[in-house]
Length: 130
Image (cartoon, one colour):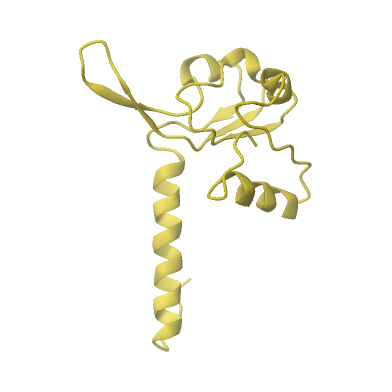
């Protein structure tokens, strides 16, 4: 887990621990961060720095989940969205990688709406749909 925030890093680490994963929480100032990342079978990036994690930081075949979303300026003055992972270089090494945009964000919204619907049903005595 690269990122130690109360919003993503710590809860994600807790979820992984619940599933019996061995979890290391690192951050932007971790000594030898590339070396720490190279040990991960699953790397979750939520550090808040655009394209910080490079391809040579990734263990071949690892699964990379990029939670970051950053707006960066292009040469023509327009902007584009990128994650905390440098997609082009990491996708050549990783076994699987989530894109930005279009990866974790839509799943977050879908889960939030699902949970909202379930709670609304419970509060109003309506059968909760599957």
